[in-house]
Image (cartoon, rainbow, N blue to C red; front, side, top):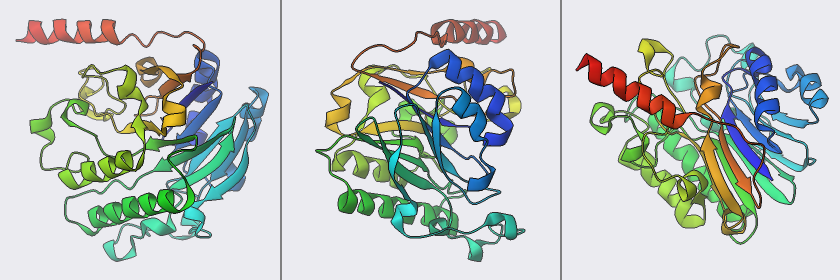
Length: 299
């Protein structure tokens, strides 16, 4: 089984890129985040034509998560099973004011069973600025995630928690820890939230197979950050031991960040269970060599 996670940064805008990538990488299960659609707006036909069923949890203009699978989807749970979320299409400007921010009223998490594994697709809050209401809301959301796992799941059962965590596990997951210091995504409290999930019983599948630094999943669109490899590894696939022990390979598909078509600012993370999936070349070694040569010439 091949599993993957990808923050697509607008599902409607990214359909051509997703179609190309499904053909390129052929995942059996794809977790998607930041779909920015309501449920009735999901473009299901391209997925069906490619052999995938899609389950979606969205609110309209912002956020949104989905699971696409060619192994079937059942037992869907949305929003920590807490009920419906807001319709952000009807809330012009809502979310801009601090007093209106409520991460528990946003479409940020869903789970479903596919191929004998419960998959959780999540899109953690950004946090914006340290010690702001957005940052405290992010940490409260992580606390709720941990409580939901403890109440509804078991580390002894097959479980994958994947998505855009908007936090880096360690310094090697940031292009320059000193440059990023003092901001969100790298703060001790955010990293402790990730550590709490791992302590509950989740393993970082990418790090299990790829210990080398410099492999990131997100690069800002601005200032040529991607071409300088100035990124962060914030998109993660965590899994309980029944799944982690089956994992044999992992990769971040850097090529999917290039385009055309117009790419997301995130790259997909891929993990194979039991046996290798369709081969693709993410070209990390070549890219890092080219970046090193350019940097040396400038120096």
